[in-house]
Image 1: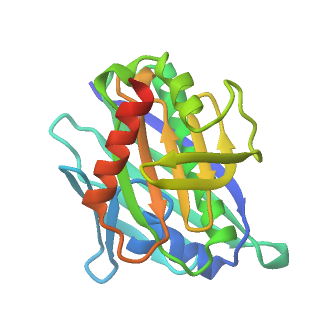
Image 2 (image 1 turned 60 degrees about the vertical axis):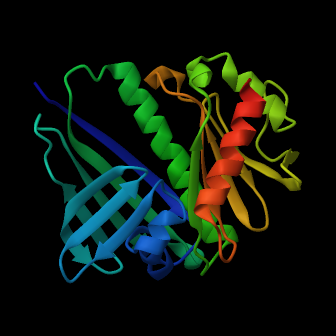
Image 3 (image 1 turned 120 degrees about the horizontal axis):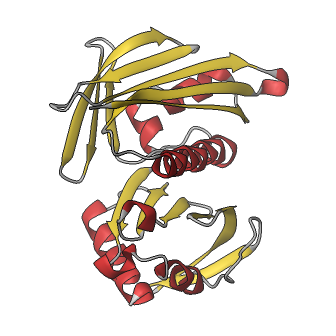
Length: 248
């Protein structure tokens, strides 16, 4: 039987409400900090999401620019569904406060440990939203994702990933990062670091690395590339090879 869940987050964002709204309530904006590709059709009250072969659609239930945006996903055959809500308020100094709620019903086997991992994941995505607004104002990114080899579903893979990034076993946010991807040398700063996530910000990208052994899934990347004419297929192939080499 489906089990109800709810995740609530509140974050201070370095942008005025109109810019926050563009980031959380438009397809290009959402793609620039969250996973997958989105299409927001306010007139039809629909939001469409795709990630690989996954396709979902949701109904927009609240549309009040730049204050409130909410949508409810279609229920699956087992009764599970998701509801997302974004509440934006102006704050001092041209900043905003975002109150975010993700609730719904999941399969009954979704234990407390899984729920905690899910909630921590939202902290990473909302941090990425703040990085977008602070360092890439008015710009949109192409989302690129790739999975590591099946063997990287083990927790033992994460230290290898950090080493491939030139990072120590216990890195600290703010330290410089330099690593190679094919013939390209990537230089940036470690803008986010937890036992399950590493984020690297450069002048034209937000690179995101995910440790997913708790979910029984391999290490993955979910990057936001602020470059023109990104070839998603080619980038996915490059990062798949990089992960295979780094985690072998």
